[in-house]
Amino acid sequence: MAPKNIVILGGSYGGLSTAHYVLKHVLPALPAQDAYQVIVVSTSSQAMCRQACPRAMMSDDMFPQDKLFVSIPELFAQYPKDQFRFVHGAATHLDHIGRVVSIAPHSSNTVTNIDFHALVIATGASTPSPLLGLNQDEVFLHEQWAAFRNALPTANRIVIAGGGPAGIETAGELGEYLNGRSGWFGSKSSKPKVSITVATSGSQILPALRPAIATKTEKFLADVGVTVLKNTRVKAVSPAEAGTQNVTSKATVTLDDGQILDADIYIPATGTAPNTGFIDQALLSDDTRIKTNNTFRVDNAGPRVYAIGDVASNVKHPAVHSILNSIPVLCANIKRDLRLAAGVEPSLVGEDRVFEEDTRTNQMVPIGQSKGVGEAMGFQLPSVLVWLVKGRDYWLWTTGMLWTGKHWAKEK
Ligand SMILES: Cc1cc2nc3c(=O)[nH]c(=O)nc-3n(C[C@H](O)[C@H](O)[C@H](O)COP(=O)(O)OP(=O)(O)OC[C@H]3O[C@@H](n4cnc5c(N)ncnc54)[C@H](O)[C@@H]3O)c2cc1C
Image (cartoon, rainbow, N blue to C red):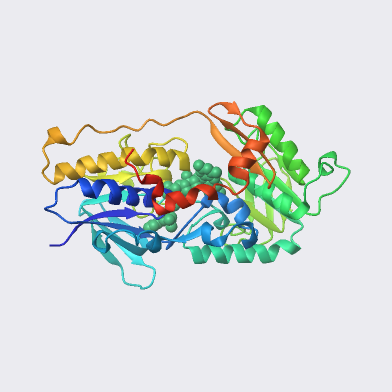
């Protein structure tokens, strides 16, 4: 008898945690008459600590590479072979009515179709700069970093668009790496070796944090030779592919206040775009995320279809800690739905679990390898604490437990 497929699209924080949780806590709770297989489909065969990109992009010496990138098939070798399958490829079409996903496999040109009994969409979001995550696979990311690193020694002017955490972290890391740290740059009496400019349309950088913290951040950035331009949006970049399709192209960056900045390297860090190009428009919200309710179900897509992580619309502030709070809720509802579909009495499956987002400010932003700013649950954090928790290794100390599934050893 063919197993019923529980298909998970995406091999990162949302997808891999869901797969571990389902294998550990959902499959054992299903009636034995049916067989189930968890199938993870991902464009990248490796998971990576995405938060580390602002530092990792500069040199392989920044992090142990075997911790930064880990093989997905190896992580799941711990489960029975008939219960798990990894498909290295990209979902290219979701037929939610026929309940089939089309996959372009990594190693062939022949599209394959996988039918599903349950589907979890965790395809995340891409950044305009390919330096900041797995926009394609790990090989592509390494190629982008290699090109960028080759261009760094001759770059005299770097322009970064975006005053959010990704832009500010990237500026701080590049500043310290290329200019070193000194109180001197801030005094304007000494010129940094490389001119690094961050342009933001906002009236302050790091808009999620209180203004006093943003001001302190500007001081830390000045110490590593970074200049901040506020209230000014990037209006045009020439050539258009600079920073996106070509990470090492020189660029002329025109700001909406009329300033023109010449850049040897241009890095757009202006947010993310959900990876939903393969999904019917009817399932998407205005910002192209998947319309997801607070039980993680995608109601318009039919039964047992769910979305989690950066691709889902039910979370206001997408972040890893929010995904970690989401997984037990999502998986409890998957378990309930699968048990009902398998004929278990409704009175025995329990109630739906509902997700409530913690909307308090939780943001830590390292500025190079020894400073940082942040707020947790509304409280300002001292620089040394940001360094201790995040700045030392950009959360790499946490990912081992997640990728191996040990974090999910107990049902929560
Ligand atoms: C530079 C940067 C720094 C960040 N720092 C922090 C931080 O410090 N703290 C924090 O909490 N959050 C941080 N975030 C946010 C955090 O990284 C995201 O919230 C998190 O990665 C989202 O996880 P995800 O599983 O939803 O998707 P993603 O991590 O985006 O992963 C998506 C996965 O889906 C795969 N995929 C994409 N398209 C397809 C397809 N068509 N078919 C199959 N597979 C596909 C990809 O290969 C990837 O495996 C940061 C984000 C960025 C960009």
